Each structure stands twice: as structure tokens, then as C-alpha cells.
Image (tube, rainbow, N blue to C red):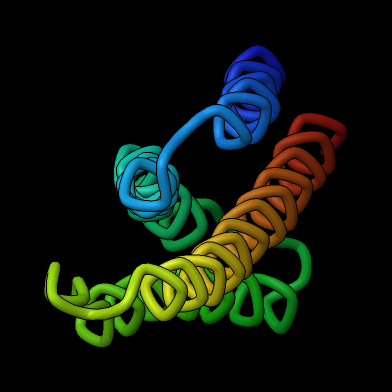
Length: 139
């Protein structure tokens, strides 16, 4: 997971370094590709959200309120992705490059926000599952 983050950050650094050597049109294409790459990375994690929700459903938690919050957080992360996908609209090529770049910058912030929801909800669910399994084995 950390390797994936490092690769993504390295790609962004490389991308930003290359942007200074590119035409405005190429900058817009690169910005779009960066947004869509982040989207694809998160889409690959949707299965993990589902699996964690299923594990929380099956595992008798020591704290049912925390389990409920964790399941809702996982659902909210998934809903955040679905909302982003429904609202994302690729600008037409006829739109000014500056406007497209602004749009992609905003979309990058939004998809990064969805990524933070993914990470926080998964981390929380894993902690809760670990705590539940630890307390179950101690009984």
C-alpha cells in the first residue's frame, strides 16, 4: 500500500516536472490523466470496502455502536466515489485550456478527498476488526 502511494506521489512529481516542458494542451491532457489515474486507483479499492463491511457484519463486535459507525463510514466512502463519478464531466476540447486546467485541479482535490474517506474508513474498520478478534481470542 505504501509502495502504491509512493508510486503515485512519484508520478505526480514527475508529471509536474514535465508540465513545464509541455504545451498548454498537453498540460490539460496530463491533468486529466492524473485525475483519472487516481479514480482508477480508488476503484480498485472498492472491493476492499465491501469486504470490510461484510467482515464487520459477520464478526460479533465488542462495540456494536462503533461497528455501525464503521459500516456507515465505509458506505459513505463508496457513496463519495459514486457521487464523484456521477458529477465528473470531461470538458469539451473546445473549452479554453485554462478553464480545463482549473476544472481538473478541482476534480483532483475532490477525488483526493474521496481517497481520504476511503483510507480513513478502511483504517477504522481494520482497527475495529483487529480489536474484536483480539478480544474474542482472549475470552
